[in-house]
Length: 269
Image 1: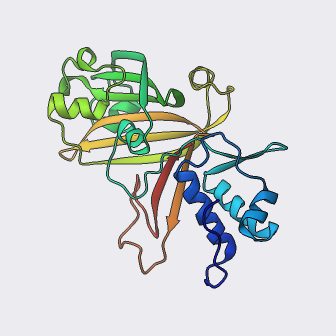
Image 2 (image 1 turned 45 degrees about the vertical axis):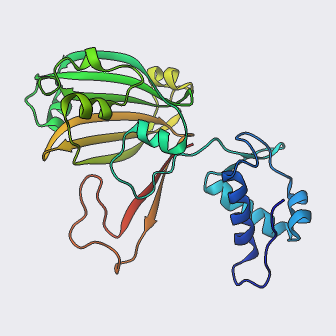
Image 3 (image 1 turned 120 degrees about the vertical axis):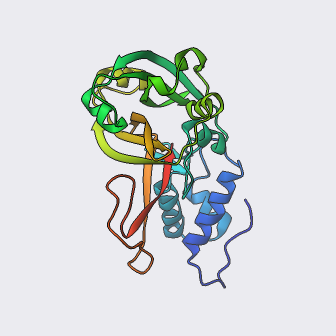
């Protein structure tokens, strides 16, 4: 084990132990899926009480670093994607930041007439030709979400011919079409995963997941509408809530905005 806790510090012992264990997890002392020392071993190694150990482990479980296997012990969870307070990034960039290999399998790629909901999000007439790209997104080969993306066909000619399966869509749009992305609005809801998407994600039908809508803008106009189904056991949203003194003035934005709080973390577990 590394250095122990310092009883002369004002910080609670469980917080010190939590920090020490987190540092070891991030440093790779235990591999993903590996069982960490037992509560008894941690008590002996750090000279703290079982209550202190349990509180530290409980916090690390809540933060997504550890998971408990009933009757089996406590294990390091698979790496988590933590976006923090960030700029606009793609799924591929998020995976790269975590050190995971982003993957995509094209389930459907076609040109379709824009349905009413899609036309409304993209600001085009109903029936205007749009690309439909349905992709299974993975991290290190493990399924994370199903993304269905719509883009206006006339704005990105021959996109289906130039977009490879594992390529970043945003990178392709930037390099091939000179697109500059200004901002994106995202909304989240809990959903039951339908049978077809569940089969792609490797979860039971009607399993709990997240439904995520994103509308991305360039030059003040929407160019992308994406509806994603994310596995509930591998995706998480964390909010940091701020008091009135730090809250921005004005009304909350209807999509992706905040009032009195800011969404600072999205994680893929």
